[in-house]
Length: 195
Ligand code: IMP
Image: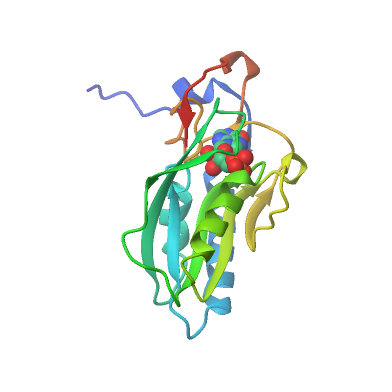
């Protein structure tokens, strides 16, 4: 350990630019929390975080919803490289509790092709929840391969590969407090599984 002041430059040097600062994200997440609290007045939704990418958004969003909620997590993995989703979704960790007759709010980091969420929504609908809605911090509408509309969206972005605030490349950068565009030089075509 050293006494040197903490700096994010080891990670931010890999960014082409910062898209959203920690403060901009916090402001938007608080707005979404207030909207969700108003929409779910008198209901106690089950807020489900999709691991691992949504973990930061989930932690901040749930604390911005001043209402009675319960929480659970589901972990998915899609086959293929990090920047291309194959649409084949594997459940690595299922929900701990049943959701029948519950109002479900799925919390995702980013909607890209839409394949992961449309698979999950289909799977969860078969468990007969009272309703399912989606909150996504980021949306890339131009990348959609299947019709999928989130109910709450933090920011709509162009076709860019972004990291930070939970979003990774090869499991790195998730802990960055801001969201940035990764420099193309940092890309490697990796196979394997991502979530
Ligand atoms: P979809 O099934 O194509 O909508 O993919 C959604 C998942 O792909 C997200 O939950 C992320 O894990 C990953 N993903 C999509 N775009 C990005 C990105 O720009 N940065 C990091 N991960 C991404």
